[in-house]
Structure formats: C-alpha cells, structure tokens
Amino acid sequence: MGIDALDLTTTANMMSGIIDFLPHTLAAVLLLLFGVLLANFIAEAALIATVNAQIQEARIIARFIRWGMLIFTAAMVLTQLGIAKEIVVAAFSIMFGGVMLALAIGIGLGGQSIAKDVLEQRLRRRKMEQDEMSHI
Image 1 (cartoon, helix red, strand yellow):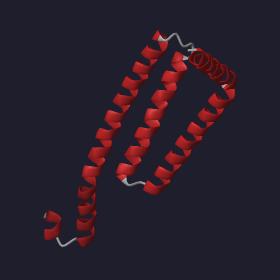
Image 2 (cartoon, one colour):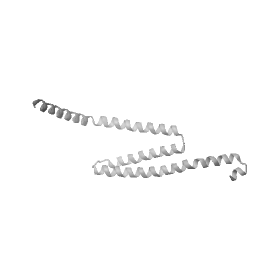
Image 3 (tube, one colour):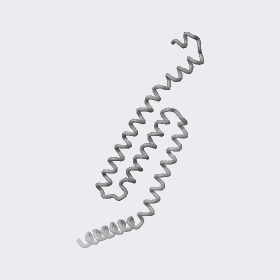
Image 4 (spheres, one colour):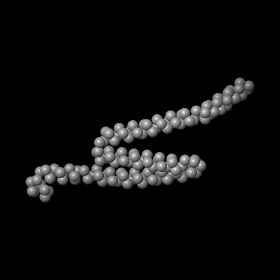
C-alpha cells in the first residue's frame, strides 16, 4: 500500500508479483523437505529389506532408490515453481520410461533361462495332474 501511495506503478507491479509467488515458493520448500526425508526413509527401508533378503547389491539398490526419489522431488519442485513445466515433465517422463525399458530388457534377457525352467516345471506339473485325472 505504501508503494501504491507513492504512485510507483512498476515497483508496485513487481512487489505484487513477488507476493503472489511466495505461496509457490513456500510450497516448493516444503515439498523439497518432505521429498528429501521420504527419499532417505525409503532408501533406508530398501537397504534393510535387501540386506535381510541377503542380496549382494543392497547398497546399490538403496542408492538408486534414493536418487530416483530425489530426481522425482526435484521435478515436482520445479513444476511447483512454474519453471519450464512442460520441459521438466517431458524430461522426467522420458528418463523414467528409458530406465523402465532398460530394466525390462535387462531382466527379460537375463532371466530367459529362469523363465524357461519355471515354465517347463509348470508344464510338467500340469501334465502330471492331467495324467492323474485321466486314471481316475
């Protein structure tokens, strides 16, 4: 109101823009804080679960989870601040899709023999069940 009284329209418009941006900034800071805390919590939970499951790469898995959550949090913060919304969403979507595709291809190619063994066991079990049914 003091700036309006001095009749400085440019300064008044700038102050109005800053005041309008404050709720977005506060929400972004809270989002960042919550995201970092959640990333650390989920990474520690994953580390404990993978160690209990006796998986050798427990630390690597926990780091991937932590960094994935932090990247997701950063994308949410930038979107909340209104900084290049479309680019952030597109970049995050492309990156997430690429990681999921790489995991799917890696697991698919790496697990061919395991999947073959599992399917053969099911087929043998089903065939034995059918043979027992036909003898009754």
